[in-house]
Amino acid sequence: MSDQAHPTNAATVAEVLFRLVLDCADVNRRVDEALDELPFEPSLVLGGGKAGAVMARRVAARFPHVPGVVAVPHGEGGAAGSLELVEAGHPLPDEGSVAVVDRAELLLARHRGPLLFLLSGGASAMLGAPLGGMGLDTLRRLYTILLEAGLDIEQMNVVRRHLTRWGGGKLAALADRRAQAIVVSDVRGDRLETIGSGPLAGDVTRWKDVARVLAAAGAAHPLPPEVSQLCGKALLGEVAETVRPDDSCLASVSHRIVLSSDLVVKAVRERLGLDVEAALSYGDGDVGEVAARWSEVLRGGAGVWLSGGEPAVHLRGKGRGGRNQHLSLLVARAMSDIDDWLFLSVATDGVDGNSANAGAWVDPTVGRLQGLDAAIAGFDSASFCERHGLAFRSGPTGTNVADIQIGVRGGRALREALSSLRGSD
Image (cartoon, rainbow, N blue to C red; front, side, top):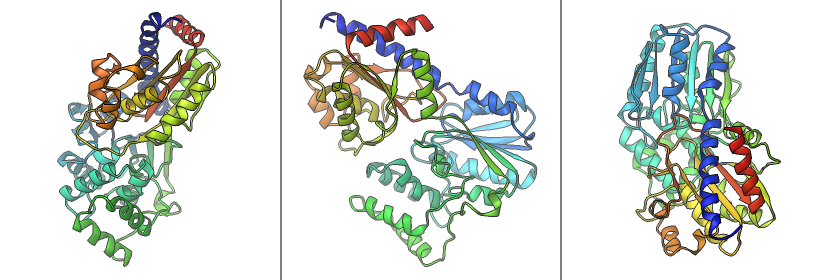
């Protein structure tokens, strides 16, 4: 494969693979299947997350007269049947987040029958009403500190499920009724207590675990005094713990995961029709470590590999970008001495960090471009990727199942992937 022909072929394959990932992450059919097997007709629908609007519309088509309120991304508010779609903030909670929780608790008091709960990634913020004794501004500052500290989602959600009104099973205790959650998971391993901070899930962590995470996060970013004071009271037993997994309020609660990173990886593999190895552990961890693992994989020989997960990026500077574009540039730099490979990383929600891009693709030519090191050092991956035609753009997809990475090594593997995908169109 010549250097002149390679960019055209790589760009074509990258775009088709990107669209394939988004197609396999489509949530509509999965929600319909779950509704077909719902064990009751709900009297109330609640929920929230990046897939909130899409999920709510599927439910409203089936149960148009059932009331409820669902937190949705900004720009997607309105109504679906009898459901109120309230715009709420992400990655930081806002007034809409509090409004949804307030409205939902009023509806819970009025409607005593079974609850259908729609949960998807982003709910930790979009349903992030602060625990009593703490204001919204304080919670927003805390969320910012957790993000800037580079913690993984499980560490962040140890804190978030304790310091929000519904996290850690507190919604289950409040509702105290039969409930089923339909879940679009953005968490590797699909840990129910971590997805959306687990409104209907039991939690084994305690306030002492919160204190440990806060100590790590606060080492570089001073914590708001209200957070430290609240945690101190909790350690003295003056603030209730989250709901334990064996609590009786969870006895009539069930969860059904309809879409996840692993399910998307499996679907992409099947659609490719190739002998694709699923390297499912490669997408999590520090972004530099993830890039090093992918470099090792791509250097190992010809083939196609997939992974899912969300690399952690310790942000510095004021550049534009996100973990997918940053990871792609790190892989490009690490692989600059090797020919015949392609790598892409995609945010399944269509939004990578503070940019309007959904991710990026790279190939051997990228590692030789001027400005690569500066873009990486300044965390300005979006500007670099846009300038060189490497950025994917889809707009918000209405779903979120973490990030998907695909790596291809060898000209033959590229041609086979392109041929297989064209054949499946």
